[in-house]
Length: 305
Image (cartoon, rainbow, N blue to C red; front, side, top):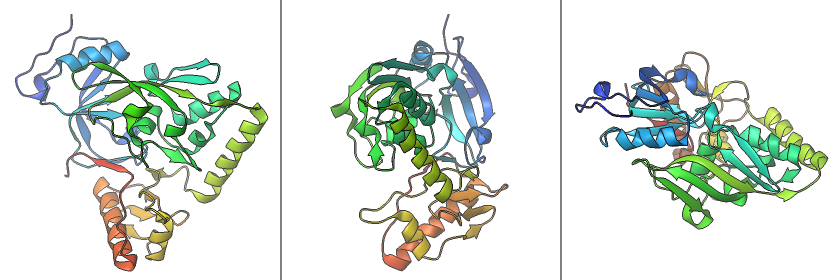
């Protein structure tokens, strides 16, 4: 039997379903920056049906946020109000069907790239250079090395805040650069992508080129959230940051990467506030230097401490 107990207080809510529900849950270890506060509630659903049942009974006044592996995200020090929903290994399935791949939204992008390579399906190589999971990649039309999610997208299934399921086709997504027009309350649970046949060795060669390029230019294996700012039209964000003299700039325990200055790094003890203030200082200096306003690519969420 599934049912809520709510008296306008999140601590009074309970769920008797199959998923795991934790209160006052630390989130720092679930993000690449390894910093930030707690979630009022953290829910890990068993499957799509469990997620739907949970959302149907969750009081409407409780905000909801979906979390993958926390790559392109900065959780502020005051934590997350409401419920964080983490789609874990039960949403990490991959099914192959000729040149199509059906993927759970919790699947790491790199896993999809590898599965496509093993199956001789081209078009997915760029995912080797995209940190995060398919759910986040769908939401922001993630891209790298000249390709984007929209280039391989066929359809997706999402669940809304009321627990209702929706099938989205290409025209429903409203794809643009690092953005979609999908309603904010939609949580992707799976997607179908389509590539083209190619020789496995050729796909592997292209993926290795991406790996080598990332190793050479990006601060991998550091506490970072990936690319910090979107590339303004006609410009590279890193060049603007570098031109404004921000390479190596520090605030508290946060620093602008010396290796690739569109990456901010937690050197070990940085607060989320350190990282966000550093990003805002970079934006201010770029604006003063060349008159271009950088837009955050990293999603900054939660309460300020």
